Amino acid sequence: MQATETILYNRAGQRVVSPDYLLFEAPRTKHFMTGSEAVKEAVKRASVDASVSYPITPQSEAAHLIGELWVEGYVGVYFRGESEFGVMSEIAGCAMAGARTITTTSGPGTLRAMENFPMWAGTRIPVQLVLMARGVNSPLSIQPDNLEVGFLLDTGCMIWYAETAQDLFDMILAGFVVAEQPDVHVPVITVVDGFFVSHTREAIMLPPDDIALPPYNPYRAPMPVIDAEVPPGRFLRDPFVMKSNYISYATHASWQWEVRAAIERSRPYAKHYLRGLIEHFGDPEAELVFVACGTASAQAKEAVRLLEDEGIPARVVKLKTIRPFPIEELRQAVKGAKYIFVPEFNVVGWLEREVRRYLYGHSNAEIIGAPRVAGGMTMPAEVIVKEVLKLTGKEVKHVI
Amino acid sequence: MAHIGPSGFSPYPVAVYEGVLNPPPGKALMFNEIVDEEVAMREAAKAMLTRPNPTIFPGPQVLYAWNEEAKEKAKLVRKMAEVLGAKIIPMYDYRPKYPKINPAIEINPNHPNLTIWHNKIKACIFVGVHCHYANVALKIIRAETDCFTIAMCGMAGHEDAMITLRDQHTEEMEKFIKIAEEVKRELGRS
Figure 1: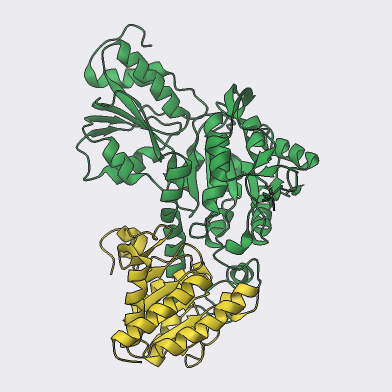
Figure 2: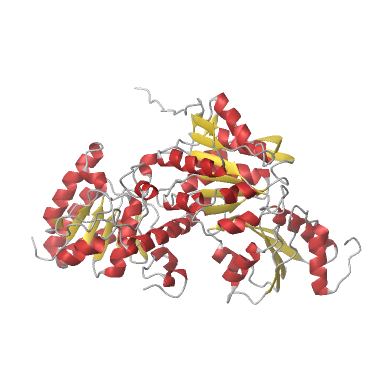
């Protein structure tokens, strides 16, 4: 008897393939598109069940483009929320009912919905938020600035940071795969710098659009699908530690540690699907190191090229994940470093704080939280070089 | 108690903050060591056969007939209890109870230590408990009791248990029962 092969298709008629095939093995072709369009292409291949949006243009077109996917049959459910808070609450409802769910937001919308993010993590839902960072009011800004990421660090969500549209495309697909692992199963926030990536076009390599991730299986979740009598469904109805809804303080403490433990468990999966939690660029022996994420690392790479022309060896350590923070990887990467610069697109230097925290007692390098731009400013590579020159006292002709 | 660090602020130790992660597929975790599944199964059986008041805590995934595998697993849990001479106390759901559970007949993830204290349980097996609730309960048990915890998990395992067996389905449970019978003979208990 002839052997037959079972081929699975999702609701859109796309052939279901393994995450490894989709991310690493499928042939890719070159396209030219914006970061928002890259979100659409990733969602198209992600067998997404539900998406909710509050389209506060010009955050980005991403939410609107996911709506187009719903019209085309690639997304199961799509609707508009009453506000950003409403969106994030409705996202939770979809996920708790067992749906693979995604939404996008940015800056002020993130803070308006803030209460929901720790709730997402506490309810162990593997939703994905694509955050196109663009700062926090006020004064009003719709420009690139990633201050809001500093507010999200301790919500219990994983936080990954994309540098390019290509990174973002791959991270969105990998994000679902890692977040849905039964021992992880917490939300993932995939961050990209607004405008610089969301609104500009770049070359991006895409696998065919007739293949997609396997659908989400909610029966592998670490808790039963929505049940209003059982926490977390129950604690959305009543506060947790109450006479009518008694649990011990021990449970509350243990639950919170469990959420954070879940992020730590994501490390081996993220290492595999992101091909490492950090990326190296430049002279591996250089004593001058830039530690950065997002487009700040792209600008730091340009600065490395300028410094190379001037005979100053330098390198970049790009962080792909912020939660979990690549602690051991960073400590290894900066061995031998004398100067560590942390260029950032925000006024507070949240990444510098993280770098100092995890290198404390593990590196003798001087850590310099500069340059730091905010409120929509760009960060020309020359500005980064200028910071280096302040330290070395050297003059370079093309520095502004 | 955890070392100084983030988990040091909590009375509850958290294995991952001590650098302990779940075992890779095909392996098991014994305290902080990754070992072959057979090695862990032997030690688990030995703990259950030699410590006072061994008890199996079956959860909803094996207590209710969701599917054929659940029914098979339920039968194997009963067989396992017979071989190990263990009691069965169910964790039949995860609802908070007021003022408290009846610790003689049930265990609840929100205060699992009450059942272990009441019954003076020194070794236990979690099986069929949804991962989140098992993890919440195992952290509390490790902090509040001297009970030796064993987690038989159908998914990736539970690093907060003292022995973690992962991807445990009917075949693996049958294998554990065979190993338990061998260990029992070796101990001269059969």
